[in-house]
Length: 111
Image (cartoon, rainbow, N blue to C red; front, top):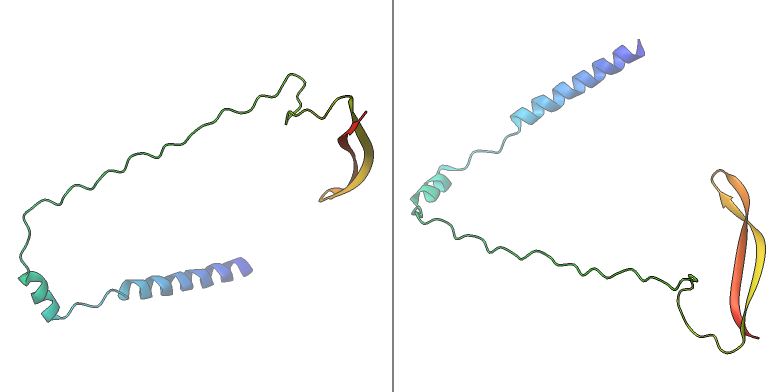
């Protein structure tokens, strides 16, 4: 019963919108405006062709391919440098629930 009532309300609303939309047309221009528009000379020349804009050119740069060891950026940390890493587990809050994930922080130190 509720669906029938809702369908009837929607149909009535659509009818009102269509009825007001059909009668709401632009008002007719005054006769002076029409005479002024027709009194202007009509141009027989074809309109000038529009200037065509050149296509946009994008520069594409190759992706940097790192060294075989996969270290990027490449720099020299110094003689006898040692990579010092600290690994821990941290909690991450996600929509599915809290999870524990590993994290690793590394830096170069003189060896």
